[in-house]
Length: 154
Image 1 (cartoon, rainbow, N blue to C red):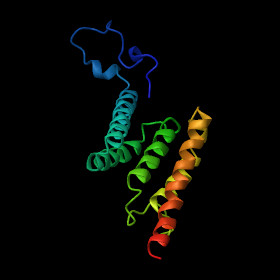
Image 2 (cartoon, rainbow, N blue to C red):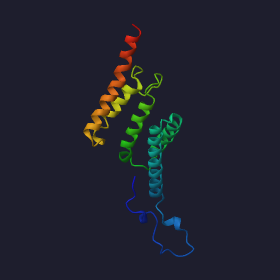
Image 3 (cartoon, rainbow, N blue to C red):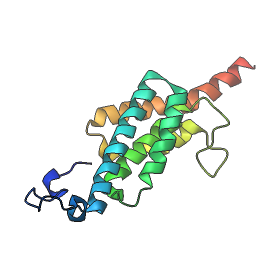
């Protein structure tokens, strides 16, 4: 979330000395900007934890991100894409955990759910080839392990 003009947040310094400047601050706007910054930080931290494969830190950061994203002062449309990306990463990082549940249908495994979330991010990914490559890799991860386990048990 970017602030177009931080000077809008605080009134100019022409106020009378000794007066309380908080009266001239739009507190709702300050809250919105600060919440946006915290959400951005949590998003970057979440991506870093995912990249490093730090499962516990990822889960902690995801919890904080989810709570912050519920903040009423944030504009939902700005954070929808970030929330979808976080949902996708959560499903991927939990992909091998068969007891992890993201959908109402218990038969949908985390990586299957990741495919569904990924498809909703198509417009967010500028590189069409990258989008398709990740889509194929996800589908292989969803289909291949059960297929392989059937042959191993034969």
